[in-house]
Length: 303
Image (cartoon, rainbow, N blue to C red; front, side, top):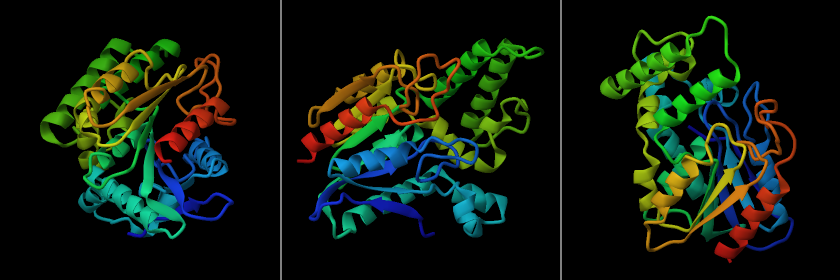
């Protein structure tokens, strides 16, 4: 399958350092957007990097039906393979090699930035023998995704209690569905309809690897310098739980550096937000400090 993406180059001439930008979960496109969720996160990061003299490549994930519908297998089992974790990781590796092959890019100075779920793929890529020169893990999970998603459900129910929904039972149903998936590598047939969107039956292979992924085991194998970017008001990836776990896992490495930046009053998408209970932080510009710290770090490690 041919990936569709955007290569952004600085306005100057010469061979540039570059970053491969990887989006978060779901059918997220090259800009960081979904059909009903517009953030332009990756587009804005790419523009900020270009101004700092850093090229970037970003692409539509294969889950973006508006781009790849013609390539989708009609058979459910084949579609499960098509959108598996391994298929996505193959795309990431292909995009990385494509970035290295561009005449305007210095192949020895190509890094990767992954946002949210994309940070998991960035970690995987950065364990490769000939992997990226550096990795930025933005809004990245530090715990197994089963625990992260459970906290998200629990917090959502606490923020917005719904009449007729038994929070304790719903969490128990989530635990049961997750255990069934991890035990059998198949999405159970009896998933509670309220959490069924988290467990689409056509994506068993992807979900099994997604929920089996353990950042604390993968991060110590990352070969390159890493910058962890955490947002203070992120209600999906928690400052007090995920960032410490990820940093502890990375700091056991003796061959590469680990740096950390906390972006104050920012959302999961690095947008300004004071109260995430009232404002999810999807819209508007990326917090200038985030772009400043990211590009400043890149100039240092890719010089």
